[in-house]
Image 1 (cartoon, rainbow, N blue to C red):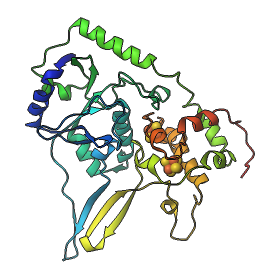
Image 2: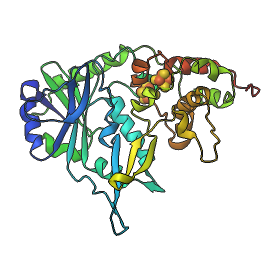
Image 3: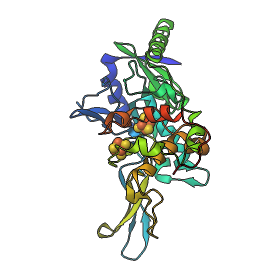
Length: 340
Ligand code: SF4
Ligand code: SF4
């Protein structure tokens, strides 16, 4: 089922949604866009070429959140779970797919994170396909595409004066009530735009099969070469929609236990209490970042842990390009003597 939302009616549509849901959408902040709760008169930034700088994983896994508080009587009290119903509007397909990937981490059979779960249960995702994928995007190389519908209850296609809204999950049907149904002509128009967007991207490169090369070359000098310029700033991981490293600390003065984003690109992240560090240099840390995405995620969830959003390519201050690393890895020999 598909519906049409005229752009001139977008503001009224979102205002009506706002009576029942908190509406989160990309807004312009300086040079970038970011997801924020929409307030009256706030202008949406749906036409920005790039997706938001900070990925919308932050809507479900905040950069910093209190997990529990300690009471003077020595008892601990779990932080209240967010119970507000929300709509995340205008999330790009790579980011929606990343959130769905993170479900496999935070909703695993033997570990179910109540903070993540509650936010996911309370949030409907309206994805916005990419009519013109950016030069740094490579979703088509990681089993996805500019109009992938994964992780979205509704997917929007921009038709110019209107949005074509494809309903993917009946959970969101009630929110589209009152909108006119799309005509067969509008459906064809949307399909043509989606096809054109997919065809405009560079040819996909080999990713799923690269796992064998990466595994065989765990100890290769390749890792020293590709990590040589890395500054260890962590930007590639903090801005990655599928990275989820965190640290849990007790903030003694606040009497709170807090979870904060962390990154495996920092030396201290893997520093063990014994003093041993299994990833002492940028060589091992870069290897971890790339292998986690293109090898370990396949072991854990049978999916590549990168959605091709291109943020790490765009924002790395020294231009380290994960696409180049993966392409290069695909040419590595399968049998490598442990070169050290
Ligand atoms: S953003 Fe670039 S320099 Fe910074 S940690 Fe990542 S790869 Fe290294
Ligand atoms: S590894 Fe890079 S391109 Fe892939 S999802 Fe993370 S930030 Fe995006």
